[in-house]
Image 1 (cartoon, one colour):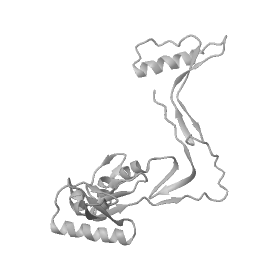
Image 2: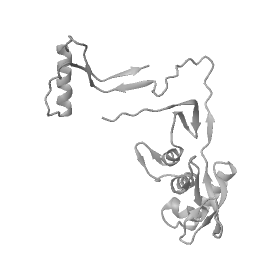
Image 3: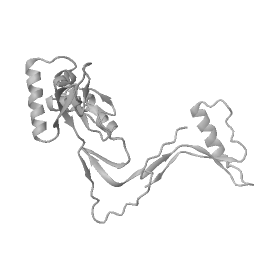
Image 4: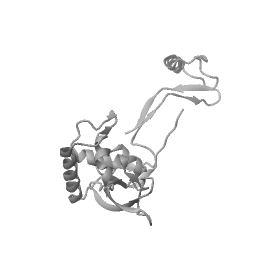
Length: 212
C-alpha cells in the first residue's frame, strides 16, 4: 500500500499554463511541462521551431532550484533536432530564439565552459565565457472570484478516492453478510491467496469517493 499526501499552498499559483494549489518541485515542472510532453507520451514530432527551442532549453538546460533552465546557445540546434540540423532549420531556430527573447519567454545570460566541455552558470573564473539562453517559469497568483466560498482543506484534494480497506469493529459487533460478500469479491479480483474471509473483529469498507 502506498499513501501519498500533499501540502496546500497558501495562495494558488499559475505557472505558465498550469494552475497549482499544492506544493511542488519547480525543477520537475520545468522538465515535465516542456512542449511535446503530456501524460500520454513524450515526443518532439510535429513541433515547430519555437516549440523545439523551448523544449530543448527546458529539457537539456542546467537546472536551478527554482526551475530556471539555462542552455549553452551553441548546442541549441543539435539539442533541438538530436543532430546537426540543415542550414534552413538552424536559421529557423535562430529566428525563433529572437522572437522568444523579444517576448521575454526566454532570456539571455552568460556562463562558462570548463576543459571537459561542461557549461556552468554563473561563469567561473579562468574559464571561457559562453552565451546561454534561459527559461524562467512565469508565476503569478490566481485571484479567486468574488463570492468564492470554497473551503480550505489542508493537504486534501476536493475529491478523494478511497480504496477498499478493513475497519476494526467495536466490541460485540460483527460484519454484515453484505460486507462479507464484498470482501470475498475484493479478494477474488485481487487474486488474493491467503483466504477470503474477514479477520475476526473487522468489517470491510468498499471503495468509494469522498469530498465534493
